[in-house]
Amino acid sequence: MIPEISALVESMPQLRGRGATIAPLTGGITNRNYLIEAQGEAYVLRVAGANTGLLGIDRMRECACAQAAASVGVGPEVVAFLPEHPALLTRFCPGTVLKPEDAAHGDVLARIVASLRLIHGGPASTGEFCGFETSRTYRQMAADRNVATPPELDLALAALADIERSLGPSGPPRPCHNDLLPSNLIDTGQHVWIIDWEYAAMGDPFFDLGNLAENHLLDPAQEAELLRLYFGSTREADLRRLRAMRAVSALREATWGYLQAGVSSLEFDFLGYAAGHLRRCLALVESA
Image (cartoon, rainbow, N blue to C red; front, side, top):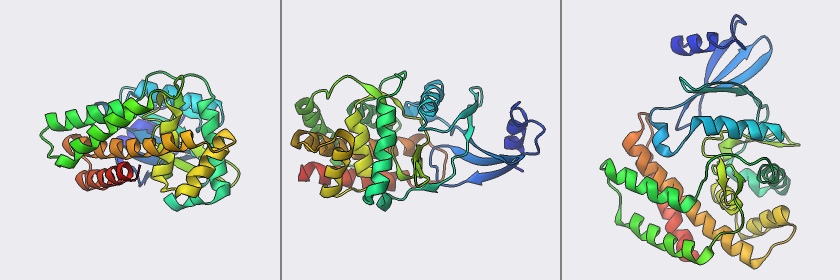
């Protein structure tokens, strides 16, 4: 057992005295995650990483958004929330954690889109998210912490500011996940669960669509199919907005990585992560 996590588990009435076993889960680069098994039931315990509030993560909002996602059948049930740690306990979602190439399969993409539509049409959440503004904030916060960034980052920010002015709003904000990494999608074969609601807030559904397309490296035909599944048809204006939001998504990831390099205590190559996403952003801007 991990002593401090064991004590945390035993502090929860839902798990106390049930002989819970604890095993670390790999894959996260912000928090510490554990699989908890107790009397035939499985849970995931998520303990927030240090300084994650600097990333714009509001743990009370995360819990509320996770509960909203559970209410529409897309997210796992929230079992307990301990804001003083902070830690979140949810039901374990059985299924296959997706890999980037999995969304290329039409049936998988259809299940992802079905879950996404439930979220976007679900109950309003708290907070607001804008990929453009978040990127600017992260970049400034990284500079305040003396993180060295390449000149190409400012070129990308300037290009995205032009895109922001040309796009304008897509409509009223809706509940969005804003972090649709393959590792946050679990496929049962009939349904896709969406987990990790740290960045969820009211925002532009096209950011979720662009974020999904970018994180899963969809090609042009798959982009068109994504929009057909979501809207019922593929319109040229929607394709343009989707591709612009792919660039915004890549820039958000790049600036997130630079900021993490200045605040995180985890052993991870955040600068390399940031540089890779910056290259993706610039390539997307150029192709657009």
